[in-house]
Structure formats: C-alpha cells, structure tokens
Image 1 (tube, helix red, strand yellow):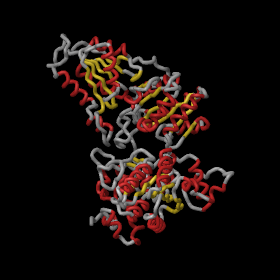
Image 2 (cartoon, one colour):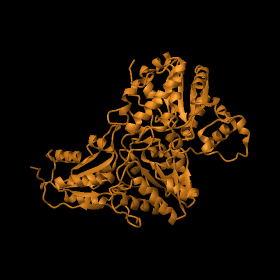
Image 3 (cartoon, helix red, strand yellow):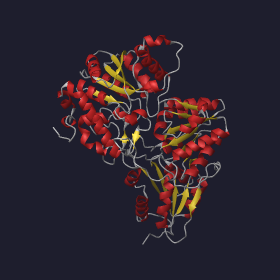
Image 4 (cartoon, one colour):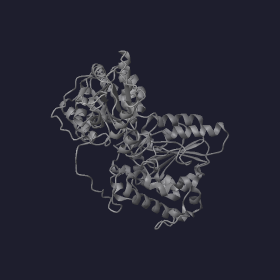
Length: 625
C-alpha cells in the first residue's frame, strides 16, 4: 500500500491484483480519484488528455475482469492508455510521461509486461490481438485476448481486414469498440453516421448528438445494428454506457469466456468528468499546462513566427482561391495539418477520409487523373502507411500529386512512432518523385508553389514548430527545379577548407557551426533532383564536404551526395551527419537533436574530430592548430 494524500483508494492500487481485491462498491470512487489525478497531473505537465478521461471506467473494468498480463490487453494508438498505465504500477512516474528518459507516450513493450503490444499509430489493435489469439490456439494455451479500438481507429481499412480474418478463423477474442464520435477531430464516415442514428433511435445520451446524422432513407439497418460485424463473423453486443461500471462489469463477465470472435460496443465521452474537455475535446486532445479547476491554459509566449503548419494552411487557402482545381485531402488531421480555415472556406474541395492513409493517397491519384490539383496534407510518419499507394498509384503513373509532409525529422515528445526520420530515404528512391526540404517558412511557401506547378509527384517536407521569422514574399514564386544556393562564402582564413551541404532545418545550425571553421554553407533545397553541379563545384574547391540532415543517414540525402561524387569518381572526403541507425525515443526536439549530435555544438565536435583524423588527402590540407 502507498498512501497518496487525498487519494485513499488510488494509493492502494499498485497493480491489477490490488484492483481485483477492492469491493465493487469502491470502484466509482476509484474512478473519480483516477480522473482527478489525471486532471491535476496533466494540468502541470501537459500530454494527451481528453481521450484518457474517457477511458477511466473502461480501464478499471478490463483489468478487473481479466487476468492481466496473462490475458492480453491491446490498446489501439495508446494515447488513451494513461489510466491503464496508472493501474499497472506506473502511477508514480506519470509526471515523467513524454519526457526524456520518462514514461513512453504510448504503450511500449519494453516499459511494462502489461503493455502487450507497442503502439502509436492507429488501427493496429485488432490485427495484433488476432495474432495473439491465433498464437494461443497454436500453442494450446488458455488465455483471453482483448483489443480496444476507438471509432476513429475503426475508419481504417486495416481494422476491417483484421475483423474479416479473425471472423474467418473464429478466433477466441474480444474487441471493445469504444465509440465517442472523436479521434483528434470529429469522426467522419458512414460508420460514424450509423452510430449516430442508432444511438438516437435508442435514446442513448452520447456525443453523437452534437452532430446528428442526416436523415437515413433506408432505416431498416438500425433494427440489426450489428449486422455488419455479424457478417464479418463477430457476435455483436451493445451499445452500452462505457462509464457505467456495473454495466461494463456485467458485460465483460458475460463475454470474457465466450467462444469465437466477440465485439462489445461501448459509448464513452472524450473528456469525461472535466467540463471544458467535454465541451471542446479537440482543444483538449493534447494539452500544455492548464488550470485543473477552470481549464484555462497557461499564458504562452508572445506570438512570434508562424508555425510551418500555419504557413502551409495559409498558402493552401491562397492557392485554392487562385485556382479552382486545387483540392485538399487529409487522413483525419484537419487541425494538426493546418486545414481548419481551408475546410471552412472550400468545403466542396476538402476531403477528410478518416484514419485511412492508403485511401488518402489513391484518392489523390484519382483526383489527379481528372485534371484536379490534389494536395495531400499528411504527417511524414503517417505517409509510411500509404507507401505502396505512393509508388503504385501515384509515381508509376507520374501523377501530379503534391504531398505536404508535416512533422519531418524529430518531432519530440511523441517519440519513435511519430518521428519523420525516414522520408528522405524512402522518397528519393522512387522514380518521378521531386523531394524538397525548406530551410525557412518563405522557402516552404516557394517549394509548395513549385510542387503545385509540376506535372509529376512531389513532396515538401517541413518540421513541427515555428519558423525562423523571415519575411514572407507577397507571392509564393516557384523555385528553379533541382537548384541549391550558397548562403555563406568562406573568407579564406582557415585550412583545411570545409563546405557544409545542409538540407531543410539543418541549414540554421550549419550556419552557426560554420563560423568556427570559416566554412561554406549551401542550402541544398532539393533532395531529389540534387544539384549535382553545385556538389561538384564545392567538391573541387574544398578539402572536406559535410552533409547535414535530420533524416536517417542510411539512404538519406547525404547518401545521395555520395552517389553523385562516386559517379564522377571524385575522391573528396565526405562526412555524413544525420540521425543514427536506431530508433530515437521521446524528449524535446532540442534534447533529441543534441543527443544525436545535430545541434550546433554536436556538429562542431563532429567536424573537428574529422579534421583531426589526418586522412584529408588534399596536398593543401592543413590541420587546425
């Protein structure tokens, strides 16, 4: 037992077995304490918020009904798993979540035996749980398997692929369909509208009432609300109130030993128990510090430079106003991708496809086939989920789709699942692709204009966070294709002569590091096509080339520079700096860049070490004193 002042019950629960020993009459009070602890803690440190308030009772009921960790519990995405972490021995470390060396932002197998599957991206839980249930069958083990997936996660094709297969195999597993009408934004799609009509017919108080579905001309399907799931081989149960512990407990006791695939539809409220979050779950999805009583956020820094996301959103509105062929696609990331104003101003040219990145990419391809100019706004990490479609449906057909890749490079507290660490590598190897990386917000606008003007696929990859505060041109003029620029000339004071070839956000630390070595700095602008002429010019004039990128070194922009030099049989020494060949965990972007040696000091150390290695083979080379 651990006493926590003001938390009489929560202090007694350090593992699920403690929870199972509590009398059922104590559970509602425990839920109140968990919710209050979340509000107070996240008010101090920030983090994923509203989704966790919505799963408090569900977390209690699941760990009480099932013998975790022997029974497998798989959470989809994991941004709603803070109550789960609290009930499985990690409550005391909740203050460290998303911080360098602290608790992972999502479920993480290395962190706890109760985290049975590592998550971060949506819609994987049913597939993973099906694999665990199939393994139990193969190994003749008696264990129960549960997947928890939200209605947002249920918009992805992967979820239906898993349901279809698990139903075919008649696996012993339970899917909890957590229906709160939200992902990060409001949910979209026919399934969402079906739930809204069903809950309205049953008179169930639910978030769906805020956006009632349009009239259904074929209402008969509401008499068999689980018909689709039954067709896929699942027994459907519900809907039930996901905040009613008695109802949840009874349903889970009834279903936990049921044979074959089962699906329990529970209705919850994102932000439950904290009125500001209930009223505005989008605003309180992920939070910075706030007042745990009023919900008011801490006063931020004075408005400075706009974020790259804001720059993109403004540019897209300007482009759409100027050209009626411009259309925008997002996989459920309206707010995150800066599309709120665009969606309001151009609703008929705005397509939110739900959490369905594969569909988003091929939808864009179809739009391009018909002469429109699709802009697919998608996080770098999420484009990975549509990679085959990018190659097969866009690039092979050489269709003019512009990918606006937000969150390129290291994103910070969301960690390994969300870093855009691989896009240079996986994009530049695709024929027909143009890949650009802006060094500031005005460059970002010009690159977006460049991509929109091309008659081939292109991607503009920009980071999370604010720009440098440079002035924006009144008109976003396209750039010359595949041409970089020199930002700093050497003054001839130092030998050996060093040139820094920087890509995207690495330009600024390159300029700072260059002062020590009196180095040339080139903003390469394009990862593909590379400015081979500039590379060879710098190779001929310098004793060492240094490439800088916040992408993995393997196969990245630096590798592309190496390929240019090898093709010309050039032997100038090259130092490639970039992200290491391992997954980078969570922390602030600044902490992680320093950890990877990509801050100014790290770049200077790496160059100085390379210059001391005494293998610069130019006759004119002299080492630093």
